Image 1 (tube, protein in one colour):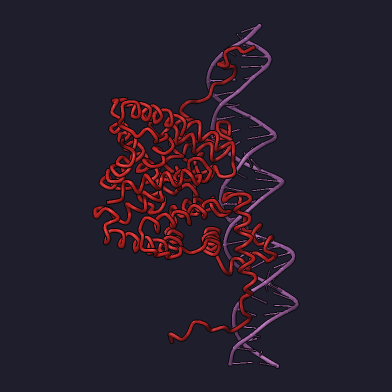
Image 2: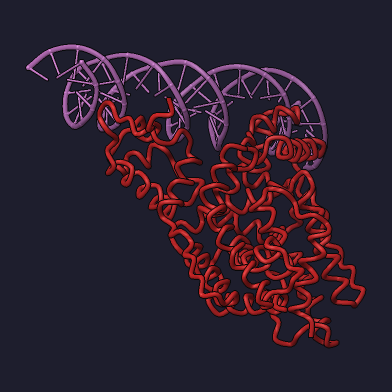
Length: 194
Length: 194
DNA sequence: ATATTACGTTACGACTCGTAACGTAATTAG
DNA sequence: CTAATTACGTTACGAGTCGTAACGTAATAT
């Protein structure tokens, strides 16, 4: 046992079907929003049948999580060593993400995860965890060389830096402007810098 | 024309039905989350039929907005004149709200409003507008007597003070602890105070 | 060649939505 | 008191969506 799980027996999965489904999901999210997303519409636009979709993701939520993961660029570990610049770059990545076609879906997934522990777990592992790793490293370095206050936890930095733009979009429905993004970041940094 | 619209002709609405429906909606939201909320379940728990519900709110979203409005205490204009205390009190009210049974529903409504202009409007008027008024007044006074930086807009204050706890709950699924709430508020105030 | 798995199509039961029909109850206008 | 009006509960219905199950066909490993 414990053999390589790449045990392809019958007909292999058609990779283009995966891509077509994820692409269709992102497109429909951008066009109609999360609530209007339909499994059948995704399959139809992708040119496949529903069973092909259900073979890959058993619920709408998992599909959307996968679509987000495939569409959103993973956080680049810019690692300039300058905590302020690195934080600002990470914030810029989030802002681009929220402004993009899948921006509105981010909230939808989190809400759908309410009362759904499995989905919450998937979301946490695939989406949040990679970003948390990068953030933790930035904060560690920043505190080591005295840029960030010693009493600032990673969670505090996260909530203070990323909270305002996400909240802004949740409340207003529109992404935060670039000017206001810099303004809120400056304010957050003012509170976090040593 | 323009007569008093309180023109009650036939059998009047049963007020207890309104209360029972709103209460049932809040209870079910607390138990199963927004996604699992069903019109029929609300009507059944309230002991009424679906038509009685649809006579009052034509969609699930409007019902939930109404349930929030009825369940959540409106913002008290504490008006101590101390901008820091007033802001902190407002933040405490939001935190109590998010910790309560309807906390999870707040996100659900916002997401449901995505791509639904009418619901967005209702949500903005009934839920956000009253709070915005109170906040604006607090910020105005704070800037007048030099407690708050002159270059801080109301939107900046709003996003910086309320964004972190809302984001925290959106990401982690749990309300922010009281200790961390004070911590993030102190940080925000550090950035906002003159 | 045979077993195995994926694919598209079609069909199905279950659930939810929003509305329409009924008969009954409550209130106002005359 | 009578008629008109509106609310109520019950029941039923069409529409839409979900998730799954069949079937025949295509593609790959053994």
